Length: 231
Image (cartoon, rainbow, N blue to C red):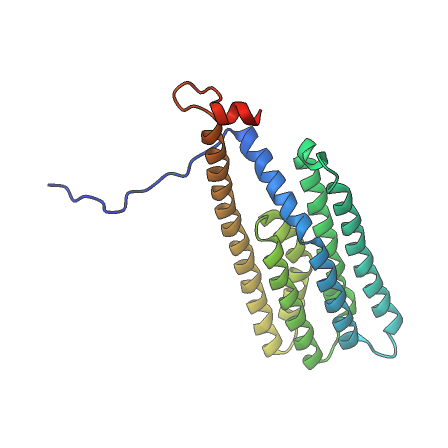
């Protein structure tokens, strides 16, 4: 007699492609919007802290100009979010607004790429401190962007990869090891973002289906009393 599987696989419900993609884009855009002000605050604090670490008598003007640029990028993101909060505008073109918000995230990540590409210090202790700060920035970014794996990658990769490559190219073995660890950490963060987005999508499908079932008769596929009252 064949053994019974005590835990049969349960397939995840699916929505029509158009409906699912639009609903997913709206929810992802809303969550990115909600976290923009927090990102501005975090960027200002982190940029000032990084400037204090990197500043020398010879590069002070360049370092603080970079801080101003980082703040301006995030202020522009806040302006974009203010427009996206206009009633009905997000629902009218969710994918376009999601693309715009993702480009804002990319600009934010690219602003940090200046550190390993241009402002990176030469001393070992300062490099370790900078790597620690940028690792913390990457982790904080995932906390707000995990529901959108694309946005998470657009934020982390522009500065994470140059930082890891710079450390690996160092002549010091300790920095090389940290560089490889940074690569592993980046890969882990992106995996987490992909996994969280998958869970987020499954919850979205269940929510939309529950809403539909509450408004539509399952036998006739016509609006029930609740559906008629809501319409």
